[in-house]
Amino acid sequence: MSKLTSNLFAKKSWGSEIIWALTDEYTAKTIELSQNSQSPIFVNTSKDVCLIVVGGKLVVECGKFFDALELHELQEGWSWIIPPGMFYRYKSMDKFARFIQISNPDLENTAVYVAPTVPVETKPPRKTRTRKKSKKDA
Image (tube, rainbow, N blue to C red):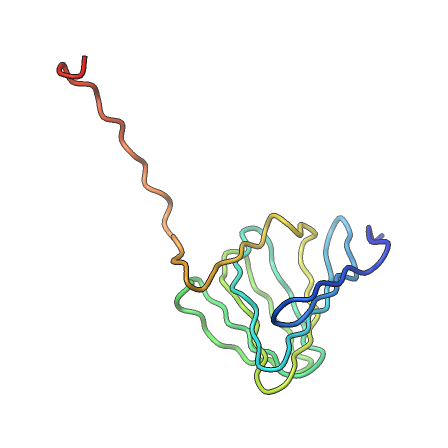
């Protein structure tokens, strides 16, 4: 059963999204990209993102590395799965693109916005060493 009492609409600079189902198992939303626009780049740490194009043509850019995204053009009726750990963004080309996205119900903690101008650290952080006190410090 959905936890929503009404649909959640959010206007974005690149289009809009409507969350229309939110259960303990999944979230369903309809996303529409405006003409010649693109979403920011995201990476999900723990969830699959499944989508199906219901209007227009959608370009999905995704890849394991922030600076090496591959383009995938999806026609109306085509679907795509983005596994955890993949960087991705959505683009519309000439006209709008509308698609349904299904993912886990965690709306706040799994998708991380990656600003296009900020380098992404893909290696684990280095451990710093603590300097031992010498006889001079004592």
